[in-house]
Image (cartoon, rainbow, N blue to C red):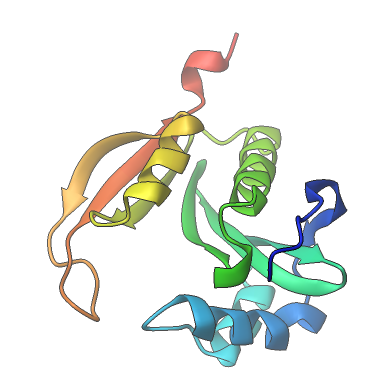
Length: 159
């Protein structure tokens, strides 16, 4: 993204639609060693359990995040930000959006898997109240790395 400071107020988060899929699939290739295909994202747009958001800056898709709503629980599938736009608050905005959506749907929790080596992502999730509750051995297919299971419960916030 260069040296120019980014105005975070210029980030627009909205629900992903079929019109966003090709751009999100390209972003995915830049973010992950085993990227989802464009067809996978198209399938998600017709999946009634799937809720995805994209982040746009100056009209460009710079990030996306999503979760599945299954039986009162949200399973976060991915949070991704283009390399040149990281550490600028975009992932935080998307996590806040997912938390707000999950609460609005009355979900009991949000859960996710994160690479044990991805300390910065773990710290970000901890900032939003996610706790490590377990691990998945050899979870990642690209290198067999283990994952932490992190969960944020909404139950204690109910009256």
